[in-house]
View 1: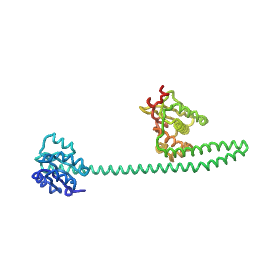
View 2: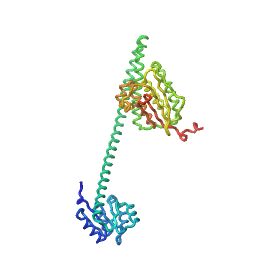
View 3: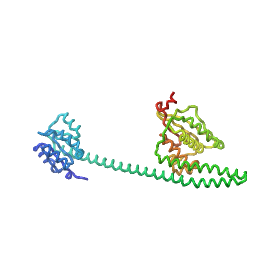
View 4: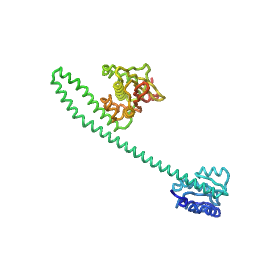
Length: 384
């Protein structure tokens, strides 16, 4: 830590007063004196002091204007300035402080008081410098972290893109050979193996498609053009497209009478995301219990909640459920959905919305939040 003896003061005053002030402070600081505007400015710019004590009015010099000049100069603007002056009216003190002075002391002065005020200003400046250094350090850390995340996104995009293309050709060959082999079997045996082969084929092709779509999404950025779409209609169509696959598990969806308004989204991608969320809820729900769709809204948002009874969720699963590489999700009852779940979340976020999984007092809840459409966003053929 610096000591007072290492601090320098520039006193700008008449020759007599400057000598008196310098004598009072010389034992504690390295003191320099200027008695006119030119030498004062030259001293302040050439060898900037740690603090300036200045008379507001000297013959031939306006201290307020000198203060204005110093505060407008990059070299001297951060030097604390204390007016030590015979001008003792409030208007003068107000003017000095408005120009950037840190303190205003009227003459005659008490040397002990002046020393305390100088020491206080040095302490304040030390604290400001420390905070500024901390802010710069934290800014640098945030910049580094942001650059790291950008680099990670690029690597993830390239990795996913390469994997999807690398897999597609051999997968098509393997599936083609398998289908030819199945064609050579007797009908009864063929039907038995087809029941195993067909779901696996669909899951494999869906996984490759999802990897490629996610890679393309990461490469294009985080936004998707959106248009007014009917969320209720999308949920209804999505449910109809998958309901047959869940009849055997005695699960059903209960839709409310109330309908949400139009939301902003991409109809095809939003339907894909909603379908995935419905499949997720139906797979996680306890057999024999319904999945209830509830609609709500905020000032600018429409919300779809899928509520159901299911197994207790760990904090880690709730936190990482929609992450691309979630160990907890991949080892749960929805592992067969693979990347479809994080892809659905990514698509919704790219449309300006959000998804969430959490355990509530009413059961497990998957929520989808989207921006509502306002009137001036509607195409003319919808408005009329």
